[in-house]
Image (tube, rainbow, N blue to C red; front, side, top):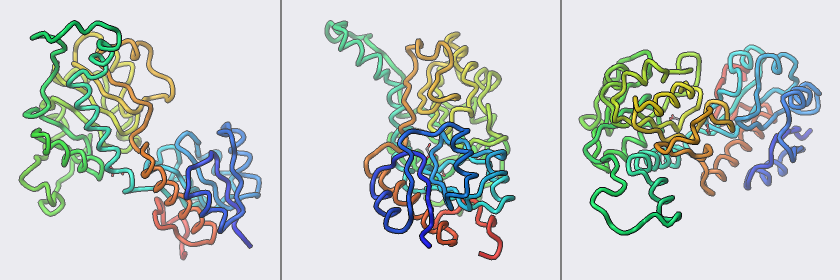
Length: 331
Ligand code: GLV
Ligand code: GLV
């Protein structure tokens, strides 16, 4: 029997072709509400569900679910209660690797764009306020020679480090804030002698640009709060391409407004698509609509990986990119 796969939102090719070649596929044209998704997952009509970040797959939904696999169209999976899925014997898959460089490009773009005030400058030109070269027009912050602090040192952080080193930045990292752990020289690999590991507190105090590359979980929720913002340099800029709730966004707005830090470049928000009150009014911010992985080729790769994960799970095989391979003991 062909596996039955529910796709909660239309995805780009090649996913649809791969899926329809191997499974009976239902694609929802409109993003389902939580209640609708819960009902469908419990209906017995589907073996696997292919989800987006905004689909909340929590313990309550999983407790009634009849699907045996969830294929998330993302590398992050904070929208899914992994412990509950594992306990229920539900396998979860994700799309690691393919979006690393694209997301690091957006981190670098936010570093350059906030430092050099690209949005303010563009707006000045468009609004007819550019009256010719001036010695003190739109002065921004240096990038080369400045210190980039990386919170986290996974794939995307390392790809960002590679770019920042190319721009002549000094690169520090704290591997797994707020808790530290040792990193051996062999783990540093190509970065040995080029980047320096510091404690989280030192990272906060020393960074000219503090860039977040941690997964969202209980340890990292509001990792950057009013206290941390207060310990950053007044000239510092916060960069977030990870997950919005890693930052206390209301505290960030207050810090930016009061000049306790100099700027922020954000691709993610605490309660997407909403923004904390006041954030959009601040000129010293660059705000992007969660487009870290948004290139044509990367989204096609995410589509391919998430479809192949779904097809494998539908056939009862552990997918190429499992998040919780122990969910199916003996598979
Ligand atoms: C996007 O945010 C992802 O996790 O893939
Ligand atoms: C995300 O995939 C990361 O490892 O940074």
